[in-house]
Amino acid sequence: MKEQSEKAVKVDLALRAVASAQAITVSDDDLEAEFEAIGVRVNEKTAKVRKAYEQNDAIGDLVAQMRKSQALEWLLHNSTFVDQNGTVLPTDTVLGEHDHDHDDEDEAEDAE
Image (cartoon, rainbow, N blue to C red):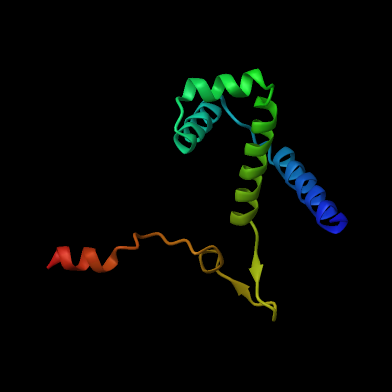
């Protein structure tokens, strides 16, 4: 457990450092959208979710988590990925992202 805990702390500190270095912030709109998303997941109204976070003095923790998530996203999209031989891999290959929909076959059928 000690190794896992140490690794988790290092990752946490690294993501916080990236968030600070990249001046990643969480706007009121971002926070409200997160309350809304949490509400959908737990089947509660946004206002009730917000109030629960306020009552538990947990908004700061939520904002910190959101900043770390945004920092991870930034890292994923601003890093160079290489294979075991040092060959640079396209980001979309590693992350599985595409500039088009996954419904190419459906679109082709619709075009006919």
